[in-house]
Image 1 (cartoon, rainbow, N blue to C red):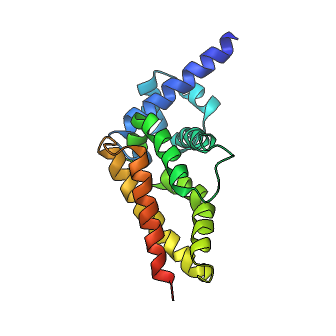
Image 2 (cartoon, rainbow, N blue to C red):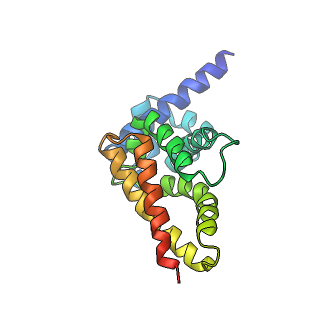
Amino acid sequence: MAVDRRVKYTKTVLKNALLELMQTYPIDKITVTALCEKADVNRGTFYAHYKDAYDLLQQIESELIDEVIESIPPTLKIEELSQMLELIFTTIKRNGSLCRVLFAEHNDKRFLKQILEAVRPNAFLQWRKLNPSAPEEQLDLLYTFFSNGAIAIISNWVQQDMEWDAASLARFIEQVSLHGLDAVRR
């Protein structure tokens, strides 16, 4: 048991060190040496758990993505996009400090793209119900437009201390999404 607690402690201090460094530096400028110094851990201990700073960041993001996905109950109907987004935004808000670092200007938007890719099938299903004849490639373009706009809105929301409540933000993005479908109507 003691080993498990030490491993958990080591991983926690390394994660905290990375997130603290990411408040100042982009991930591509953070070295294992800097991480180890910040966490007060030797390099051998770091390499026992992670390949590099990107691997550590990937694990942090994966844990948060898992939490986001687990927050969506399996009984939620696939066409309830607004409710799904609200659950996602509630989880993001609950992890506000972490998300502020992950969504910061100097970090890439890979994390948000992964979350929005999980929503893609639900958006397509809802759009398909509204416009069954919309060509697949146009829905794809619409989703690309929608998801990049949503990434910008969500990043802005997180960086501005999440002033909107999760439900209002979800309804806003859903309305933009649904009315964007007008672009592919013939």
